Image (cartoon, rainbow, N blue to C red; front, side, top):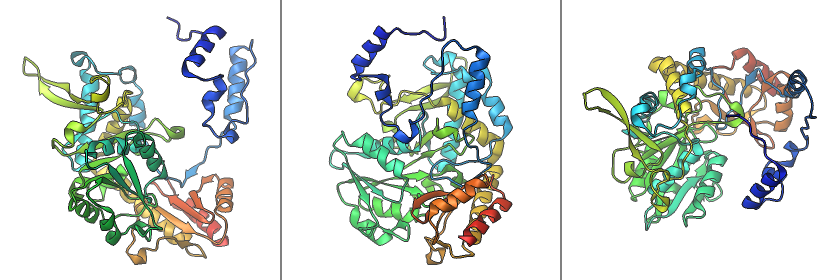
Length: 446
């Protein structure tokens, strides 16, 4: 069978009419115009070599930075070569959906190992697979918490903006209210959730409180207090985690969270222009949460001869349960991404993961000290009891864009401008001290 079947204009028109779109270009309406200005046109009749040369010229216009000091939800970590080589083997790449368990033992075991590792990291007893990313995992977890009389999701505004947008997209058509707790209303103080104010927001209508550890600004929240405050009002807690921090910080299970979610992208998945990434979800073995978890849960058992084998234990997807009885519409398969994450964790080991996490936070604190030797300051001063992991926000008299541009000329992708003169920086183990010193000099001159 040919791997490419062309279509005629009549067939293209029929497909466009079926989805109510006038022309193919309308399918890209959500992409900013600035990114669509350059029309790519490849003349017909060119040889393979000519096409290759032209595509190579286009690719050369991409800017590849030697050093990345930007995070905000996607992190540039070192990926051991063993992870890339093993995960690229054909037997892993071609395996897909494990519907027939007896023929899919390899992929089922890889999912089982991933779920087991996530349970160890999060301090939970059960985890699933096949969630797209951390934001969709947060939205799916919100569904797990909603009850007939509790249909409000509490979200502090210091979580990742994209997560708030995904929550709104998921929940707005289901008669579920999202209440964003803002700094203006007193719920955020010095970058963190205000312990005193949060109690006023939690009431009998609140199904759950979702917060992130660390939050969008890299600050470490008082997770145990937030969990306790929510539970005192009968409200569940969803804790969004950067999984790399779990090598050093208390796990969501230890903090008292009901559900742990996050993006496992730091575990061996490259930035890849924004995806595919890997959402993870984990919870306790309770009727209220485990049986409402979407995606797949792989279990270990024995066959008729007593040999170890793996099966799909719980699967609440719409492909298995019809329409409104389904727990979720998740129908793609992130199993290969989960395999990569498992390989990364296996290659690093417990101590290796701790070393990476320690290097990240050490470099970040070194950078914060160096960047503030001049007129730049930390927006959230740790003298006020604020601590951070590997992201922090600086404030400078100079416009943030100017600093970013100067760094770019040196082959360094600076932090993310989040205000006219505010930059959210991130340091991973790949950042060199010498590069931090170069940026510190730019900050001093600014």
